[in-house]
Length: 295
Length: 286
Image (cartoon, rainbow over all chains, first blue to last red; front, side, top):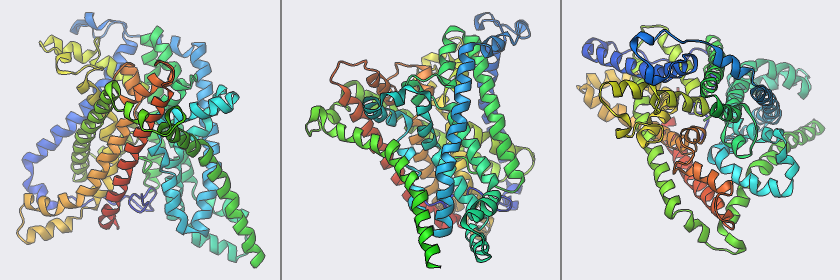
């Protein structure tokens, strides 16, 4: 896929289509239709979340639910039990460590590569772009079979460790990371900066760490946030390799305590959404459009 | 100058080598082993395993997965495009666009465990919506609206498919220039004619490309499907079944063969998507 199609970070505000004056005047009934459509979408988005919150925090079985009982039995007790569960605490620690390590490994591999490719050999960009799309073709559920067939037989100690997930998570974060970095580099015209700095006698290290990296901070933050969201949500690979990460432990926990399990899931989801939403918004406010699809 | 160049070429290799080694070791090597084993079941070359992977229950798995992914891609695609077109011309509630953008970014990543939990609380046997519908005399599971029914799964998958399509379509929809519409109007084209001759042909490649992406996205979704119904007849769940040794021994090749088919299917979809996206390029260039 050519990255020209979707600009990840673009200087200036996102071009928004001009509202068609002509159509606006002639579309009075269509306005109502649009409103109805948006309300339907809003309901579809909200209802499962409300249902989940009700199940998590209201200790009244659905069968006994009636209009006069709507306000009874609400409590946060389930959530407290869940977040003080030792298994959940251990899994959360593992997952947070995995997040940090995956971000570090991912940036260590891709950041120098993206910079050097952009300033020295831009003709290699399409190739790199294609390679970083490979994780779409070989998703966790497919790769886990190959990993089990190869690493389990040859280096069993490797898969025994929780940290064996790190390289794979770094791998699946590549599409997001590379596209964010690449667009960040092009938005600041990295090659011009590189040539200017070099012609004034800066060494390559100085160019990279004191000129380019500080300028693409926003892209790096976006890449890290998307990697974190990916790692905190990944279930298939961890589950099939029998690892106790937050998502897999959440499923285990929910079997013994459905209410607490749902409360915990809601909390994790809200925190992830809030963090990701804040990053996206703060970047937008700075006039950077972040594409989060990893394409 | 020349020594500097040589040093920098070495630098190119220095940054490329770890990346290449990393991808080769953790992605390419396991994949090649699986593909190789898929075509050499029991150590000899043959299409035995590949054939078995698409017969019987495994055929059902592929049929179900393709039907589910296809349906959720088409419905999610249509709603996603409509959403992008609707918001494009709306300026008024100022908070609407940024909220929708942020929400889409989050929700398109949201597949997985929490999402499945949310829908169990909504359309599960003890779900709020199930209960509400029963109150007005409708048994939702009769229509397949349960976490294990086909339409139930479609409803759940749409929760991440619609925002993904919205994000994918936004650049293309924003690329529709109002001058084109004015030009069409001056030439005497009606609204319908404008869409038939200008709007749809321009949006079509990215819409089809987006739908393919949604297909891939749904086909490989594991967490949601697993939490809703671990024994469902979907390809990702069958891979788990084979992988965990729930089949008679000597069937390891089966897992490899299923994965080989999956990779072929995904590769085909993504190549088609890339070609379509290249067409889109012509019109979205600023």
